[in-house]
Image (cartoon, rainbow, N blue to C red; front, side):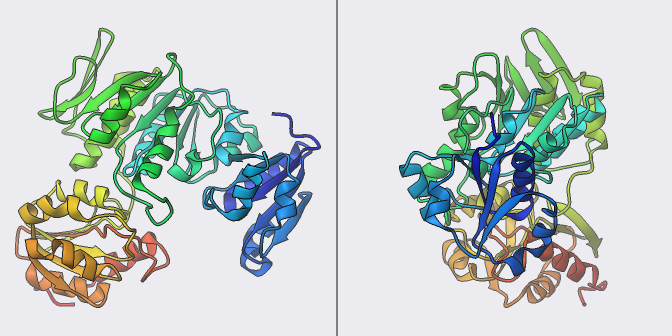
Length: 452
């Protein structure tokens, strides 16, 4: 992609916008950054642009800026349906995401991972396996480093592992990963998308430019994912926890089996540090993606066994009076909570927060069968109580502090307290990480006998 003297507009500053602006400016582009926030709110990012020749349009967007662009690069936090982008698209302007721009300059084999839940764990583990097998590896995208930073730095790597959100996939044109992974799809971000179908369509774009030389790792236990598999151009590597496969990767009685074109690898799960049905899914996806791209099975197995998981995802905080307290603040949607509930019995569930617009009905059977008591918090608590409250002992709490105290009183020895919200955090906290740290601090402050 020739950038010299092109008029390029970067929409949205933050970390990705900074990296894009520095890169295109270094290639001789006439670069403008536009953001709805004003200069005072963007000081941290503006400092990172010191010495970079860019024009700034802060505190709003100008139609003329968008119409005068040869190329518009959109940061992942910016919706593709804001008025200036809709107008620019109607006037034939080229609009792409940062991952599309970066992919034009990357030649190393790329493993791209998406799904409603498990993306970050799978991406991190995939990167760990690649590195553990001796490949110099870049891990980024929706997790940590923007993909364009790899291009900007000019570092030579042998593998690229990238986590992709539906937002990033909205703005691709030719983006083509050698291996694309779709973990699962459930209702999420319906506060941004007009319909569930629109969200699904954005996810499926990860396969759009693949050919028969590429691979698609597909979770066949997910009915939506399974329905997509038949129409892909890439070679599908199916995965399942429920049934044995003649080709693909599956889980049976304490081992993961990978079968592909006469090759069979058997990997025992007993030594894995991360537990839960959702993590078996994540591990299978990581193994399939790495084994198919040249990683030896023995070294891949060691990398999985050494992987401790990520914070705020089914993290055991402590055991007290025979009760295990788990923190799963990253579970901001219903699909993620389904996987968490399926991993335990005799659960006291603390859930709630800012409602994201999806239905809570998929949790009904698991709540009925596995949840002894449900304690609800936040803006969504009344709606959740209406949809699920009749299925188990349900109580409403005015704060997370109150919910933890309540859980300590009602949960008996051998039970599990699971904080898995099914909602975003923005009604009560800055983000899911702040919410997680508050929960963990409250749990650690509990004294034996259920007191604080």
